[in-house]
Amino acid sequence: MNPFKSNYWSYINTAESELLDQFKKMNNVREYNQAKILEAMQSVKLSHADFHWNTGYGYGDAGREKVESIYAKIFNTEDALVRPSIASGTHALSLVLDALLLSGDKMLSLSDKPYDTLQKVIGITGSEPGNLMEKGVIYSDIPLKNGMLDIESINTKLLDNVKLVLIQRSMGYTDRAALTISNIKEAIEKVKIYSPNTIVMVDNCYGEFTSYDEPSDVGADITVGSLIKNPGGGIALSGGYLVGKSELIERCANKLTAPGLGKDCGLTFGTTRTTLQGLFLAPIVVNNAVKAASLFGYVFKKLGYAIVPEINQERSDIVQGIIFNDPEKVITFCQAVQKAAAVDSHVTPYPWSMPGYEDEVIMAAGGFIDGSSIEISADGPLREPYIAFYQGGLSYDQCKFALVHVLEDFESKGFL
Image (cartoon, rainbow, N blue to C red):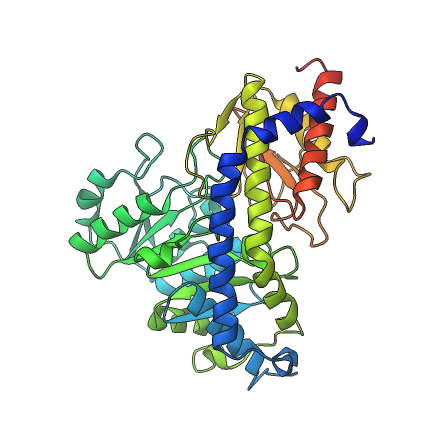
């Protein structure tokens, strides 16, 4: 299908023109983060020699050390652990929790129950061997209040000697918007007033570079994310990052490798160049993704669907939720997005039982990096209220093409 010949092309362009004021604000955030990343790379004197890599144990890898120094500077932290051997965002989060929590320790989620895959890591759902509750970790959470962190309830919960609190920035598979940096800051300040020694951990997946500040700028002790989401810029091949206090990063590094080895070993497998090139491009890519998410949300709002976040809400991640209340619409939406992919556009996704999830999930993912949700993608669990989650887009134009496919397919099925 040639999108320019679609009857919906002018409709989408009109919607786009009505978002230009919002897009200008997003561009200002992009420029700020681009300058921050460039300054960090220049400050460590990044050179071509840093792209070489070692074999075996990986001792003395100067490029690896500079990657971690750059991440620490960008996120304004004491130290960082950035490795291709971290398989996913869930792996990065699990690594931190496993490293910092011992039997009998208490963890508290301030943002209600976490994302589906992390629930299995903790032991809230499923019975996976090696989960935290099996190890003796005690879990509790605080429900959100009007879609935001319930600041007033934090004091009461912290009376129980909580070792670590978790905040999930992104909306995940829920019907609430991503938490803003100001809301996260307010919660962290409250925690530190009543329990200064409690570790504050933030799941930053999908949120990087959507704002001027990161959770680490407003007091988070350790912040965690995936390289095949925002900071990888669609180029990083794999990996995850942890940024935070030195003693916490050291414990996590010892868990990733072994006590006594820590950050000093671990191959980069030649990924230093792509990791840093993706990071350099990340503000531009995130900017494209946030604009595309806004466009999708705006169009479906005009068509009468409930969306999250709302158009006038502050965006704090790259995700746009569209509430369909109908599983067939979720499936049609994801299948249509797949048609606009650069890779596997001929493939039709269907719901299936994905590892780490309780419900069947449908995922449209046509990226150059498998599972890269900073590239154009859409997904959703097959459960009420049947929300499709759209995110990513290396090219904003490609995202507009995807929206044409969605509208054409919705019309053909009588959904419009």
